[in-house]
Length: 213
Image (cartoon, rainbow, N blue to C red; front, side, top):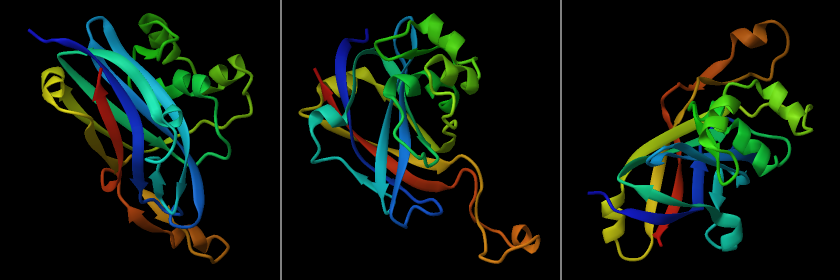
């Protein structure tokens, strides 16, 4: 019989290789979902706006308060799903991001962590982004689309047997084809665009630290 346990998940590092990320700093949103963590809970979603520098994020020396994503009760088999958004112009409110996380993570029945019941989350997953943004006073915010995603299956019992914190790395794959455009102008420009990454190709990873309470 599966044992129940509380796990704490913190965001430690991330690496992403997409056009434009090697140049300077870019803000992106990382969505994290626990899939069926325990009976009668379909999903738990958290979101955090972070800044990549040269395609790299390192939060290992940041305060725990800034790294922690969630503390959740898990039982038996469950999953960890991650989505990284396209670049965003400004940090987005975490409560607002949790509401739109369902569509980005391609899941239904999502509960905003510690705030929205599962059946309510299922309804929110079907609400258009434009409507959600107006509901929270963010009507001019552009919807952050998914650039890359990844997932892994987990079991509670092996986590209970570990000593200390466990590091989990989720590999990312591109959600669509990515292109670079030539510097030339005019109609010929679109014809000369070059595909640099195909949908489904590896494009980075996100590393978490998991501690069992």
